[in-house]
Length: 397
Image 1 (cartoon, rainbow, N blue to C red):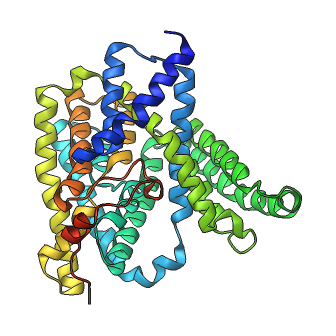
Image 2: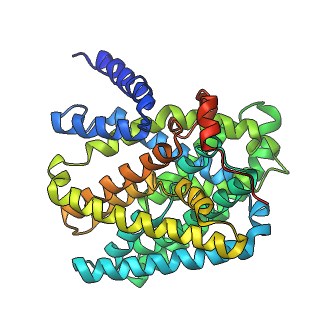
């Protein structure tokens, strides 16, 4: 098939089939991942440079959007509760690392990445699902704060794990990251003073360019695209006073819409890298064990924490816990890093893939609402009124 027609076919497959299957509560991201696995087995779009570029745009803009969503001022009122949550999350992470190293003989770096894949929520997917779950404003704020704080710490730990081959490597990489963080504010100031006044509506293009450059730098540091893109989003957010358009609601929606166009290619590309032989019986068994153990543990932690702090019934806390379950993007990124940089049994990587498929599907199934389409609820139709009534819990006191 001529290359131009093959891309037309790919566009149809990625933008029509996933939306059609959403009627069965199958998230579009999971459908694209499964389609990528099939394409990988058939040798379709193998080593395709164009697909690689589209995939990079997807993961970069997704984490740029996640960085833009972080408002430190919004997190401060919940600082005490967030510290409690992070303490619980870190204890769970450390226990998971210990189990991974003891049970599977993994080195601590590989064990830490495996643990991050299991316990780190996928912030973008979670935040864009909230409006569908019929949760109260207080519950949404709680979920947003916990998801963002967990992802911030997880990104820092990922950086340390990937660059800790030696003290020299870690030191030089940390210095390069500090330089990147230090250069972004002057860059945004220069743009605000010298470019923006004479180039109206250029903020979006500049922001995407900065995110791509930053993600490329962190990729060369060996810590994947998402770290640089997230840092670029955080830096842009801090300039909302000097350059309001850079982090306005309109800009957030534009970046989110841009990400929604390209993120299907990331999931498709991630699926291509998953070999079918790693998804056999042992992987299914490992995925089911991980799912039963950690979904129960993570739900119990949230319900118990809310029981102690808010004195609410466990059943109500469990609804909040269910919304925090998906680990989608972080699991896939960690699985790819484990496969490419460490010696890890294939069935464990396959188990992580099964785990993220199951935990991403579970909230929509349990709460009886349709899943979001690639992190962009603003482009999706609202859920049916009956679904909202069924899913809506009573308001918090």
